[in-house]
Length: 175
Image 1 (spheres, rainbow, N blue to C red):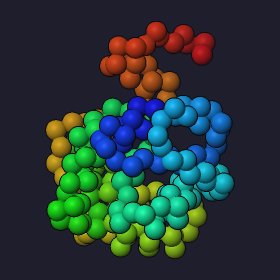
Image 2: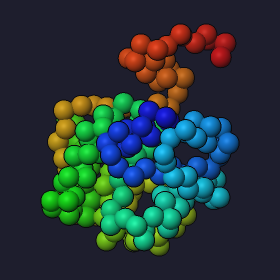
Image 3: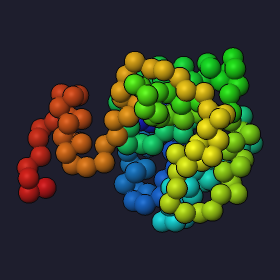
Image 4: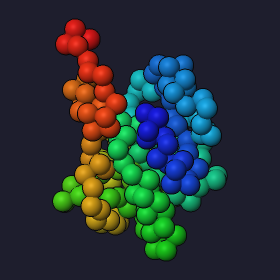
């Protein structure tokens, strides 16, 4: 999670983190970083509640939001920086990096779209479904890295990440 947060900070973007489950454990990961915490009290109601919590908290300060799940630690800072520049120049409703035809993260969502997200039902849907409804407004931005697709969801994914980063001590099968 820390690497994903640092990506936003290193890109020079104001960075906020939505917390929910295991809040104290998550907070400990970034207490020393200049990020804003947004606590989602309804985290158990699905991913859309975290997106809505961020929108409600930031909508008065942001014309657009770049939304990136914390489980994408390899996204290079140039990707969010590039999306930010594209927004400043073209102001698309939506923008997302694409590697070999596959859309990844972060996803830039303009106010014209994110305000509509507030009326979405609180269920376990996310950006993919929201974008699916607005696909004709999506600017796909070709990138040269599959890091926008590489999420860490399992212990095996974490082992692979540690191998890539050269920081793994290995994990026993008993873990």
